[in-house]
Image: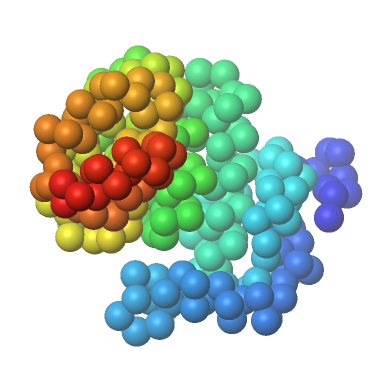
Length: 242
C-alpha cells in the first residue's frame, strides 16, 4: 500500500489497515509457534496476524512520514507486526533525522521499551537507535539495561553494541558479554555469541584471546555462535575445551 495523500500525514490507523491487508492466518499460526506465544513461552500471549518481514520493510518505507505520536500508538498495539512496523519506522526516522529528531526518537523508544518485547523487535531496533545514540554519550544506560530482570532489556544492551563493533570499538561488547556470562536464558546466550562473532570480524585475535581466557566457563550456545565462522579444526578445539 502507498500513502494516498501527499498532504495528510499517515496515521496508525492507516498503517493497521495496510497490515490487515497483508495478513495471512496460516502464516500467523506458524509465527505464534515460532515465537513461543503459548503458556510458559517467552512470547506468551503475543498476537500475530501473519505479515512477512519484506512486507513490513516495504510498509515502513510507505509510512515513514508518520508523526511520531502516531508511531507510538502503533508501538502500543497488541499485534506483534504493528510493533515491528512502528520500530522499523523509528529506525528510518532516526537514521535520517537531525539531532532533535533523533533525540525524540530515542526518548520515545526508551519510554516504550516495555513494548520491545521479543527478540526480533530488539534485533531490528537496538543497534540502529540505542547504539548510535550512545556512541558518543554516557553509556551507563547499557549497564542499567544489562542488570534488568527483563530479558529483552538485557538483549537491547548487548545488541546496541553492534553499532560500536561496526565502528571498530569492541570493548563494550566484551564487557557486557563478561557480565552476562551467567545469564540463564538461551536467548541471551545466542545474543552474546552473535555479537562476539561480529566482533571477531573486526579483530579476531582480540576476541579469541577473550574466548580462550573464559572457556570452559562460557555457555556452550554462546561459544558455538561465536566460533561459527572459524575453520572446522579451530571450532573443534574450542568445543573440546568445553
